[in-house]
Image (cartoon, rainbow, N blue to C red):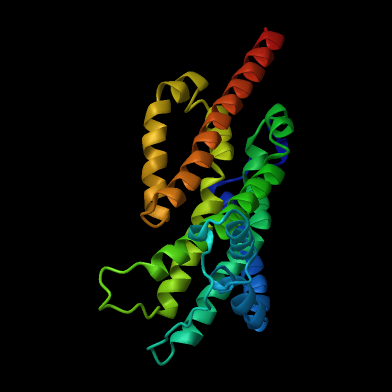
Length: 273
């Protein structure tokens, strides 16, 4: 049965509790954002501008492969890119924005834990037992999604977009804000998309989706994966395939998760009857 301590809480008391969970979550973001703001050299020179530098892990590895197998197409981002800022407060505003995004990314496990603490009293003991690893797996999947997007998608996207020309008469002068928006959107999208198995788990727990439903819409999921890949990556085939394939695997993993949830539910019902 559900925990008894919160069963008689009024609606206003629930709102008050939710408010403090949100306050603590926001405070964690602010603390990390302040640290990121103070260490701007690491935040920008190492992390944000990393995918555009020749010495970046992915760029360096692909360059080595290109030299070894005589595949010059793999030599990406081999020239340091200079960025342009045309707004008076552009760099300061971007510094604040990126610091806040860094706060969200780093504090995500704690934010998810606060969310879990809020919904936990409404769950049955058996549900709490089965959902105990949700924070751990959500954090792992979010981290894997961010690393995948940062080390795989970002370098390819930067290279494609920075070197793409509609005409030799047009020179690419990259805007600082445009570059950072591209990098942050790709990274955040990667982290969120990799949460798909966790989303399916909770939807299956409350009976909104089932393994059979997910199987029924498997073909539709492939189309949606292709659309998502086209949205968060530049319009080149390699980047879209690199995004689409993990999405398909995540969906298939979601089917297995839904099956497992249904099997446990059937077992529990059999034990109660």
